[in-house]
Image (cartoon, rainbow, N blue to C red; front, side, top):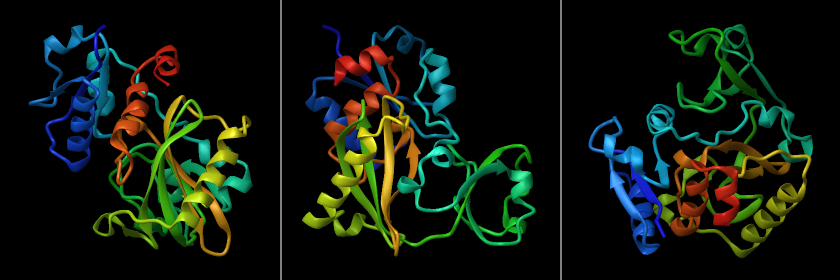
Length: 252
């Protein structure tokens, strides 16, 4: 039986190296691009699994004829308040530039500008006014977790920040109480069929100071950092982010 082939970009990152080792452990093939173009030989691979930077991912996937699973731009906006616990709207960058009150503003699905608190005048001036942006009420996240989800099942998760500080140097440590609370919130979310989710996706959730657990955002699994997540379990989700729904269900 043909094994999947994990395709990595020329950038050597800790995440890419961890996934390389996980793929080897599973008996997969691994290929690393030497440039930002797909070699002709890759076009005949039976099951390519792409792990790519968000900026180049869609272009490289198009070269291979692969459709990547991406979050809906308005997912947070349509989410029930009990999972959101803050005001969020989607608008255009041009409209957001007219704001005078500070808000947390970000592109829905890419990294075209830094996600942070802006007033309208501080937003980038070199991007199209019609591009979509998410505008969120400013809140304080006490903790933030990354969750890899496949077919509405939580496969692996990791804390990544406390009060905005990355937790890599502390080894992504959490308490048993935090883990239990995170798993309870995710179970409620994933069992709620009124909440749409792509088959393979990363759900970021956290604890808002004074409000409780809430969803931060969705991220495409094919480009998401893994932090302290189990790389083998994360790879199962990443595999399906560039495969058909049928293969996703087979891989579960």
